[in-house]
Amino acid sequence: MTSSAVQITDLRFRWRADLPEVLHIPVLQVAQGERVFIQGASGSGKSTLLSLLAGVNSPGAGEVVILGQLLNWLNAAQRDRFRADHIGFVFQLFNLIPYLSVLENVTLPCRFSAQRRSRVGHAQQEALRLLRHLHLSDELIHRPVTELSVGQQQRVATARALIGAPELLIADEPTSALDTDTREAFIRLLFQECESAGSTLLFVSHDRQLQRLFERQIVLDDINLAEVA
Image (cartoon, rainbow, N blue to C red; front, side, top):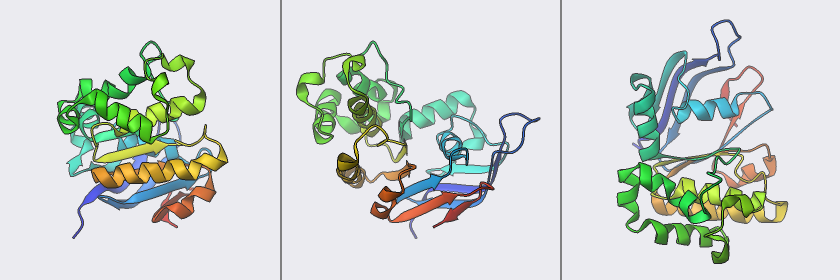
């Protein structure tokens, strides 16, 4: 039997006790190595779900198990450590460090995680390989990320998430800044990296044209129930 990368049971979340519930997922399971497309209308809870899976936020009720670890049992510092070691995250707003170069941004996870550093060997060489694979020119690697276009910054954020072969890759709108002609090619490159590393991919996008590339789709509907499409 294939083991689970993600297992959710009766997940409920609200931002404050006096506010309405914004997410309710009775059951969700994602096998290790799966590539899953997550879609839903604006405000349906997609980004909230990703933050719970990454341990950025904690559920008000229910269980979130990632790679066999029940996140409910971990405090904030322990969740941060778990995320650094096991999860690559492409944030919707990139969250790049503006005063660092492209290369320094990509290698940053290896500074915070001995596990990811040990899987890389030579962090700078791996960063260069990833950036080239994502079609970012070598002449840009020592520039501050603020000098890059939005699309180039998105590629840097993706390379940073991939470095060190995290077991789970979470991508929140990772192609939003790319033009239509390059999105599919970019995703296929992402698939190659995930397959090579054995990583599970959770990919959120509003672009439904991309869902045909994925082996499985999950929809967050108007009442925030996760359904397999």
